[in-house]
Amino acid sequence: MASSSSSLRPSLTLSSFTFSSSRPLSFFHLPSTTAVPQSHSFGLKASRLFRQDATRMRVMATGNVSQASTAASSENLLEWVKQDKRRLLHVVYRVGDLDRTIKFYTECLGMKLLRKRDIPEEKYTNAFLGYGPEDSHFVIELTYNYGVDKYDIGSGFGHFGIAVDDISKTVELIRAKGGKITREPGPVKGGNTVIAFIEDPDGYKFELLERGPSPEPLCQVMLRVGDLNRSIQFYEKAFGMELLRTRDNPEYKYTIAMLGYGPEDKSAVLELTYNYGVTEYDKGNAYAQIAIGTDDVYKTAEAIKLAGVGGKITREPGPIPGINTKITAVLDPDGWKTVFVDNVDFLKELE
Image (cartoon, rainbow, N blue to C red; front, side, top):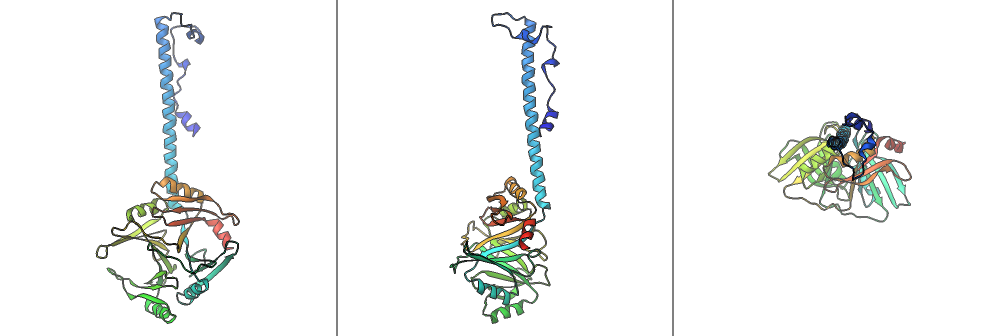
């Protein structure tokens, strides 16, 4: 940046000016009692004025270059966000009985147990479940904290979405296994998509959506927000997501927005719901966060700060002690947490 600013500086120096005397510059350093000829006095004032102007021009030029450089770098960084290789990696939440939940998800929802890890020194266990390997699919990360058998889901968390080929068959299987059906299969209000709702043993809601074969059956996470336009702007600009569609339902007084890094029928998406007039929700202590892959957690954190659309970095980018996976964590304007994970480090973890 120094070279850029110096190239714009005016080349104004004392040697550029012609004075009315051929005496050396020290001539102007006269005792206060010495009279200065009018012509010399004019030259002195002129030189001072020109030097002041030159200084101002240098400051202005440097400031303009600095501002232009900062604006350009900010614009480049926010553009990089859109090009970054991002996808939803997993959604994290807490359950009271890990074996019970694994049994329900594998037997009733057709998921596979991908891996487990126990961290006795921290007194918790994780289980990862989904419909395909973690390096290519959006999966669930369950957390069981030793001795804690119940959590408050709160009113802010909505549901998870699962795409199924035959919704009636799926519902009957869940019913036969003792699962709780909270909405029987039928068209969504105001639309044609056939859906049903169920609850898992901890009370988390799952929306079943009847679709054709999908590469990403675990397809949605729905969260409620207090200002939909604000949230859309945040996830678009700070996270680089694409607004896929919105749907307003004035009869039932809510609006939804679907955002993600790919189309709904091929990738997992975030479904944000705004209920008319409701600006705050109780988040409880059950739902934790979504993890998103990125090529650079440092650039990601800086872009979120530069975006100027709210949110807060709660963990500065850097490696996690012990496993060295680089992450950064952020809260959106409603306080929903997202963790960005370095793509290369994530794949090393899976090895």
